[in-house]
Length: 459
Image 1: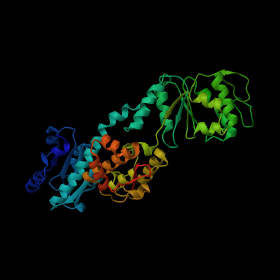
Image 2: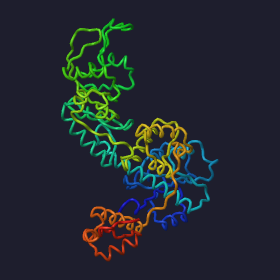
Image 3: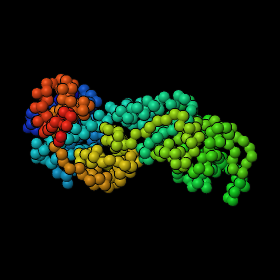
Image 4: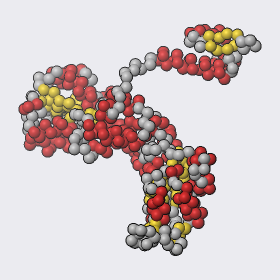
């Protein structure tokens, strides 16, 4: 029996409303009663999702808050409150209502409205429980990466494979898709995981400064060089050097980097000492390096040095099913720092998130949710808070429509494979030619004889 079939409801009240209890039981709720914290503690409750109803107007006061607040903060219980009037609620209980409760109703209450609120609270508790149940899956992903889709599972497997080797790795993927996190995962899973992970964004450092950042410099090497400074390559000794956006590295810097990759040694700018460096190179780019090599914007020999092993970071739009998972994870992190209580995404916001193409990938998702957390009202994130257009309401396809679309696709594909030879098409589909003609008429697919007797498809 799943949680939606049992629908447990914890009813916390000094004096239970018999009429409301009968109504809720008729609505399919399985009621569990408690009149005090002691009775709550004795209840045989599991950690499965459930709804909670707290009747404040029957004998509870502020002295009870410290005892009950831990129960209101439990994620697997969705709470609804009953009050005499909101004005009559003291500051302490009012704070609890705002922080932990999905809704409240005033007495005398509309029992159907209470039941609807409890259903919503139970649904939210079930969502939180589902998110918690996937925590094991998320934590098993490399370096805390998140993803359940096939593309991310392929990436996780690739990371596990390349991490065993000490050869250079090139991570290909669009900007903002999380390539640095993949690089950190490779580093953490490798034998160098206890060593330093040093990241350099080759596109963010001016070309005139890139060499000094990579190789370091000696005192007096140039104006302003007042003391010796080790470079990023030297700092990565014993660990991993991550070269982000390597495709934007200037050609003159590419030559120096190639020399290090070939010899494993560097010289600081203005110095003569040759320093041996043991660092693994992981690089990433959104640029098509093969095209850049063909256009002579990137050295061919450097490309082959960097691209010994290769992994692909999928863009967010190809991570089917992961977008809401990521959005919830980001919002949960923001909740910990937010001065206001954030309840979650509205159904319209979830539809808008799924409908958006996310050209900025995970970075865009992160920025939009940060903005929404600051702009949302009443703790509910709506499409406008995300600066997204609310998607148009669409009617779900019926089973008959789905079957019809699949049938049409199968016929068209078979006709194309067999060059419109209906005998072969009917044989492949396992139907007679008469049935095939009938189905084509139903789908308004017309045929005509070609000049050479070939049956051609129209429409």
